[in-house]
Image 1: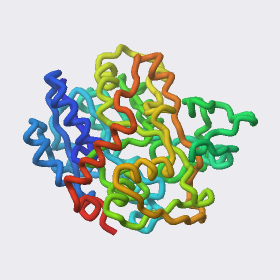
Image 2: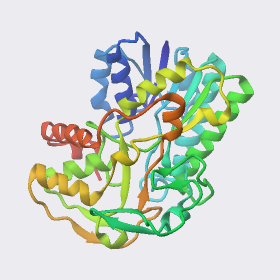
Image 3: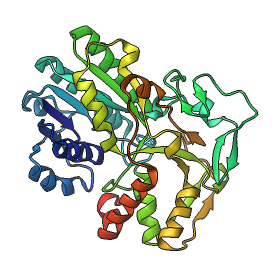
Image 4: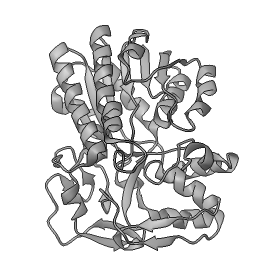
Length: 357
């Protein structure tokens, strides 16, 4: 199988490339990256050593993509993944749309030309913000959870958000680019007879992730805690109770292998939440407790001011993927912590390399 990875030297792309290369299935791997993200160059030599053929290309450039070799499957792992993108003063809204939506269109045109399958790594951030932001929650063990005495919105249960949950605006500019990419990918699949899958991922995390507060939060928090840098709990009373679920990218590979070999499926069978789910969900306060046990105490200040598009509890229910693909994550969340901590200890300058401000 010839596999092309966009964003191959980013955290998710490089993690998938390593997992495929080390998995022994004999895939021919190639990838491209524009190397604009600080830290992405650090993955280049290792991937080349593993036999991944790398190209310098920008997915916004059709001429760059025209120069890429034909492949059987494209995995779209390139995106600006910040929910604050286009609003944070670091990127413009036009740049966000060009990267995340126009880039997907260019990849779909590549797939149409080469009759390749397409797998979009999408996000939990396609789900509607207002019902999540107003979700009644209670605190248990230093973490939010949905209140037990209220009726939950349709598509949400104590196990998490399922694929039927609302995707109406507002979902952030970032979420809108991913939701539009999903729709276009499925339409291209129908129009041109291409196999297409949309995997809505929870928060992806692991060693070597580039750490910033708005993306790569586990890497940012663990590295910052270890180096005794300033940390803040932002919003929701400044207590750090907001919850997310986490997934290691390598746990996607068993699912992707099944999707490569799948027969033609209906629309609902080609879109699924792929997440760590409730067993991997935890709050920043709980992460700080783990860091304190690992590295010793370190103060975290409170900043109760709300942050745009933040929600108190975001956990994806991956029951559809478990039922259809018999898929479940393999890496426990505290194993992800340990992996990031080991990387942080071995790379004392990682925050300065990967997330300069």
